[in-house]
Length: 336
Ligand SMILES: NC(=O)c1ccc[n+]([C@@H]2O[C@H](COP(=O)([O-])OP(=O)(O)OC[C@H]3O[C@@H](n4cnc5c(N)ncnc54)[C@H](OP(=O)(O)O)[C@@H]3O)[C@@H](O)[C@H]2O)c1
Image 1 (cartoon, protein in one colour):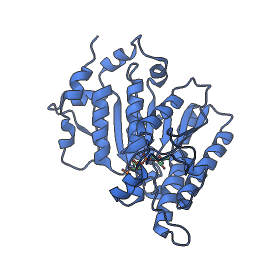
Image 2 (cartoon, rainbow, N blue to C red):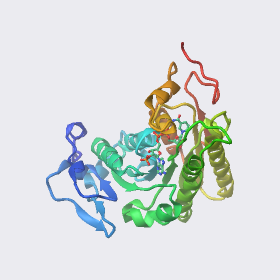
Image 3 (cartoon, rainbow, N blue to C red):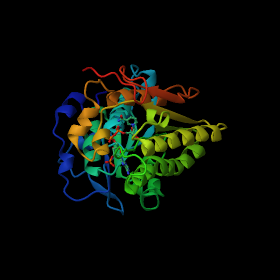
Image 4 (cartoon, rainbow, N blue to C red):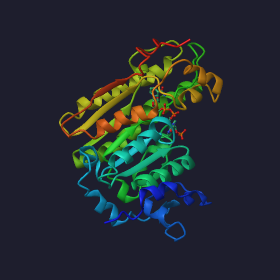
């Protein structure tokens, strides 16, 4: 049977969803909605201005039985993956990589979260059109534990997206290069509340789902900075060291369960990371990557999806990923 929406034509089609003019807090995308843009498929799903598109056509499930599906796509089939910080860089690439890897078998559900909801909607529409994955987007500031993270699964996710199988704790940031005693308190606060207490709070919200089912993957994006503190990075390095400690404790605490706890530590990756560090100063951000060949966010996404799609008894517990020119946080070869 044919898929409802031929992939090639869906990729070429303009995406009309973004013309919706009223403000949405959370939205769900599927390629069926994209295939019939003029049909009034939208309906209010949730009292909190939450908009849901209908579930995808049964054609997706038919396609899911394809005999050509790889072991990777079969292992991801039917899973629900939640990614924090999916609006940019590694999180965005990870969303695409999961959807593409799962596409031959089909049935993947993605929950994309970040603060920039409009950007998430564009990414969701592109992924749904290209791969047929169902994508739900939700505005979630992980640094606001009481106001936003607490209870977010029930508050922001439609029922069919709540049975999360994979949590990718990716949201994170660095601010500045100041050294003590001149580090702005606001920078310290935002780095800890996003990278550490935010990550822990999201994990605590999702973990009961894993424990109830008896399986699930927590994938934490750490950094070389968590292993090797460097000058001008005291706070960021401390936050990533905290992520590392939390991850290792969690793996030990959950040892009698089938929950997998995975850490992926990138070296230098070219994303918006340095732009955020230097408050939007592009010249300073570009200088970080001058004369080197950094990783792309897709390189890290491949590692994350590889880890999530191993056989259930295999835990890719810990990985450190460098570009070829890098040997430590500060040992980088630059072409002159
Ligand atoms: N790039 C590198 O060289 C590198 C190296 C090692 C580790 N990492 C780690 O990789 C992860 C992803 O970074 P990236 O390089 O992809 O940078 P990026 O392009 O700046 O992406 C960061 C993502 O985090 C989100 N985010 C920031 N604050 C948030 C908050 N309070 N609540 C929710 N989401 C938030 C951003 O979305 P919104 O702004 O829309 O909220 C964005 O989607 C981070 O944990 C970073 O520490 C990066």
